[in-house]
Image (cartoon, rainbow, N blue to C red; front, side):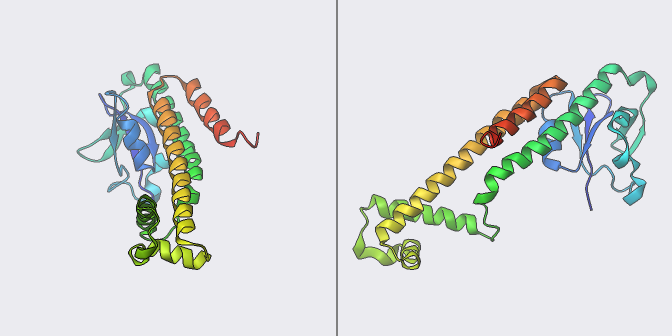
Length: 218
């Protein structure tokens, strides 16, 4: 079951945007003092098909106001539905969509580094640390059993302990560089989308990130 989360006007709780992503709603909810977040807004009063807002056009969102006490949406007073509110709502939904796509793009960089196995990342870190320790100690052949990850790697690949340690360290450096690049891009583009007050900038930033990641194919 999907959980629907909302971005609201901080002053009057008018609905600005809906998303099933808790992370994105939290991120944008901290973007300014004019925005706040609400989580699981379909529960407990709107179950399954009764939550009609999930299929409503985003242009209609400002017509609804969230009541935290009753956990229901009520009609927004007509005098509060201003052009400025509609602009902010449309901008916030555009940011939600952009961050969804940007998250997928960043994950494309990181996904090859993910094994899908429980605790495998911890093992990678242990192998990296063990390889670096073996290298720093001058590749000691007399203490092979103190470096089981290096020993197993060398046996499986039929190479020397020295070569095994160097290969593990090299692969770890490549992975670190990939993660560092992806984190730089995440911070740069997520923060830029969060902070911009302009619709056009959101589209330009999304397109820019696409080109950065696919430039070799363009």
